[in-house]
Amino acid sequence: MSRRGGPGGEGGRKADPPRPARWREAVMSPLMTLRIAFKSLGRNKLRTGLTMLGMIIGVGAVITMVALGDGAQSAIDAQIQSAGTNMIQVSAGNFAAGGVRQGQGAASTLVPEDAAAIAQLPGVQYVAAQSNTRAQIVFGNQNWNTTVQGTDIDYPLIRSWSTVDGDFFTSQDVSTAAKVAVLGSTVRDQLFGSGEDPTGQIIRIGNQPFTVAGVMGVKGQSGVGQDQDDVVFVPYTTVMKKLKGVTFVQQITVSATSAATTAQTADAISAALRVRHRIQPGDPDDFMVRTMDEIASVRKETTQTMTALLAGIAGVSLLVGGIGIMNIMLVSVTERTREIGLRLAIGARGGDVLLQFLVEAIVLSLVGGGIGIALGFGLSQGLTYYLTWPTTVSMTAVAAAFGFAGATGVFFGFYPARKAAALNPIEALRFE
Image (cartoon, rainbow, N blue to C red):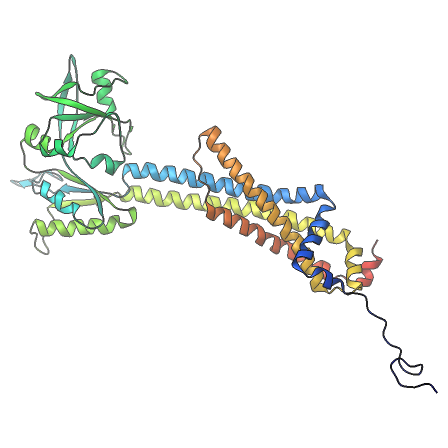
């Protein structure tokens, strides 16, 4: 007598046939998912390459443009720094006699000891006292009328200027009021001829002999059109004692430690000078402190413009690459409809299919992004080598470009992946 009711008996419900191994169990491991992604993309290498080309060009363009922008910004910063972004000018104030006001710089209240006191303030990097005059410069049968700028040894450091012949005068020359001169290139050309090295020659400033210590490099015109090379630099003590016979200076040029601390340093200088000059609260200053606000403003505007330009380029380039990836993934979904239906029929879930197509899109983006980064490095170096254009490849830009490449793959690959996961298995298997 046969048993009834048992799961395997004749009268009972037949046992379920063994189910096939679930597809997702074979592919859900990260390694297997990547292998399938690369295998799927490798079936049509030309199309995969062309799809990645959009991302390669996009990321490469971003790296190259950021490198160009950073290099140009560095060059602009160097030029503005040379003009004195963090430079502070301390000038003597007005002097009035008999109701006649002489204007800025006419007062005799600014003295070399003020410069020494300013040098001790926090936030001050370099200090140079100045006393200027005009004189006729004579060498042999040549002469030239120009500005004689008495200054200190820190002045070339403040302005980031250097000599092309000889050297700037020394601190000993300043302390001894030595008769040494450093010529601007315009003065050198007028007295000795273009390109000549006059170091060691004797010139006359007014009626006094000076030894030429060196020649400054060419600086060109200033922002207001003044020829910065039409000048002779001598120790400020020499101008005070031997050319003008005074005990005061007209100006003190100061360099703050950074552009960000310039305003704070200028306030500290004003407070210190008020104390030194015994100016009572409420009384006007007998000096003027000015920062290079206009140059700082130009620097800020330049930085903002460059940042906006690079952001626009990066956005457009990556958008184009992302749209290309989305297009190819949509085509891939259509071509692989039967494959998707088969996977769903043997046990894969919609989430498994979605993950598979999403991984393929991310692989396209990251591989293309990696090649694009290499291309960006190569183009940057090529521009530097062949066009002598300054470039600076920023690791931050590289990391951001690679991160955006991955994010682009996720964003533009999600819709095709979701479309694949939503397919009906039966309809997918019937698809021709």
